[in-house]
Image 1 (tube, one colour):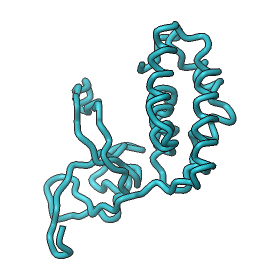
Image 2 (cartoon, rainbow, N blue to C red):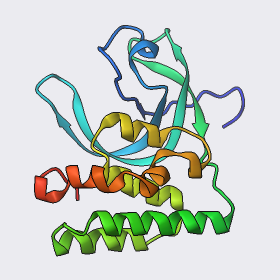
Image 3 (cartoon, rainbow, N blue to C red):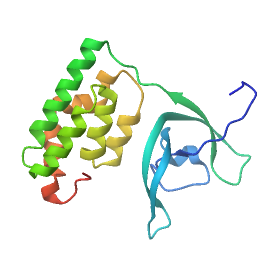
Image 4 (cartoon, one colour):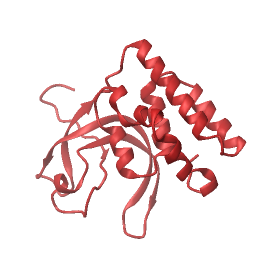
Length: 178
């Protein structure tokens, strides 16, 4: 895109409070640009989306010249650690998921293991873990936040309380998204 050219994209922001006319006051500062794969309208008028994420973004400035929420966006890049450190994070994530999913049905464990084997990229593995194990919106939002991957919450969860969170939201409890 040329510097003077304006490009319009659809982005998804998460409400963090009651909706107000000022999006900056009620949405998370970090969101996602993505392809909507499915949408289901809720009774309250909101929609639940199945989104194929393309890029993480920061809502840099909310623009008031539209009849709908519109913002200037800044891309957020994942800061990957050195290859050796990235490999160690991937190993920790896989090990934590394997341990945490021991009580899951065999077909769920197999599907999850297959997804985790498809990549060594710790950022993608962190997204898989957050998508399938983190049920609280605030936890998922923290995964979107920028910073060195080894300081983001999912690798920390893999080394800490992932088992407790997974146990509380396991398929046996009927809340898994697998």
